[in-house]
Length: 351
Image 1 (tube, rainbow, N blue to C red):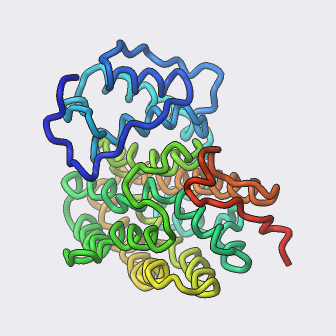
Image 2: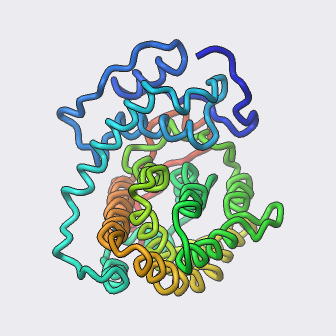
């Protein structure tokens, strides 16, 4: 690849440790220019596979902040793009296969209201009722892949839309970025909260700890964001994200207040509780309605994007709760003692 030509020093993470043939291939290519084979995806579950989602995350990171020591030109390296598109196809095929369009109405606004009622594993309620400091720290590690670049993938929709729908999306995004006030962007608030939790807040620091179920939550929004053909799905993803944010953020805020001594974490959750109630109405009304009125052919993908988010988040929550129920960490094993990351107790069995 040659020497770096300036990839945002201070923001670009180091390449992660490979965890299988797919991630090994992309890392070897980015480091040494090794040939990239076409991944087959044979024998793996593309919805959750650790190796596939790390490989895809590496491809997507090139479109965000890149990697330390990797030339920015790697973003559009034809071999990397071909490799990425193969992984995307596997992931999207899995998402499409589980999406039963006939199970929800064709009207996007009505469909999103129904999807918002789908009951997933009670991660937020469990943390709100019985979560302790270790649970809040572990949850922050899981969310760091997305929250430290919160809103960025959704912003790709702005140049791809027009009319009232785009105007509503811009209003939502302006709030996400703190209306341009330094330090007030939601990603910056999350970084402050991580520092308060004694966790490194540099992007990608914990990617080696994140299982495929977590990386899939981040890969999903970039899949929709980077592909113009999936702009409808991106709108559906953002709409449901805003519609379903207030309740879980309120539960996490409840836990932070109960633990105490975490003003930055409380502020992060408070800002979301305040902003997302307004965003929900903007999203389901002006944004979704405006986009579909202008481009009716996007309606089905709006529903697909929302349903995909609901299912990916359900798998994410199920993985964490199952580990905690067993008295184990939900993170991939690593230097837990050195990082100061404890193993949360059994939340579901707690009184």
